Image (tube, rainbow, N blue to C red; front, side):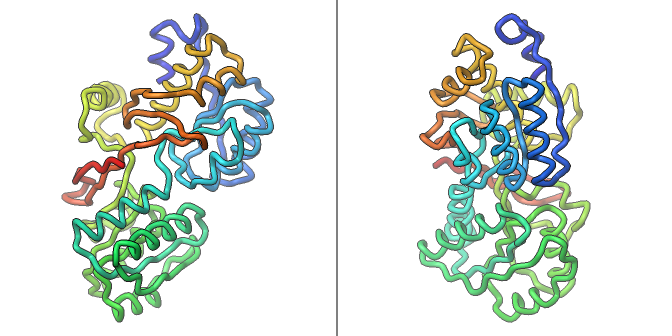
Length: 322
């Protein structure tokens, strides 16, 4: 995205310099990275990925009064840190509703069970939203199990799963723990359909192999997503980086281009004026969908895609629009 901007003459006649800060995959690291960005005079921050990190990053950036655009943090509390914090992805309340609706309508599930990674805020929140929506539709949550992110043996949980025999099992964890749960379940003869959130991607094949096939999950975008702009992005990206591409690439590209659009509308590189322009965003056409911000600086009406692990990759199933 930065290369594209600079090929077009930069931002307001000045070249864009991308500075990368390592958040160390920890809340403390994210906060330190944000403080460095403020100290170095950055006009904005793009990131982080995980909600738990973005919450810490947002506090540092808000204190420094420079805009932050989270591209892959779905916990609703991220943008509530302050008026300088934005995001380009949908939030967990919508994601939970999408997966509950898919389980109820498409998979015809009437009973469900959840397994939550208690080390991840997004997993805790997503379990809550899925469970509430599934019950509102008439479904029954048979049990809500939980485990720490460091867990590697899930036999005790899965014995209870086998006994309760739900129609679907919702596991909104990260790639490694979610794949391990599914793989162990399959070795125990459990054939129930597994479902997950946007913490899943093709990396799960590394940890779970073919055992994960047949499982469904929610994502923000897919290379097979419809739309001319999306197809053009996929072609351009693959020429540079090769065939592997996931939704994070599209969201990060959208975040940078949205920042540039706001700066151009503001006619300024001043962080406060860029913030005001971002807040006023209406109808920005991104790769992952159209962006108009609500009062909490979340995009309204962003679509979600349902994907299925099949034949060694994630395959597009359908797009769901609010």
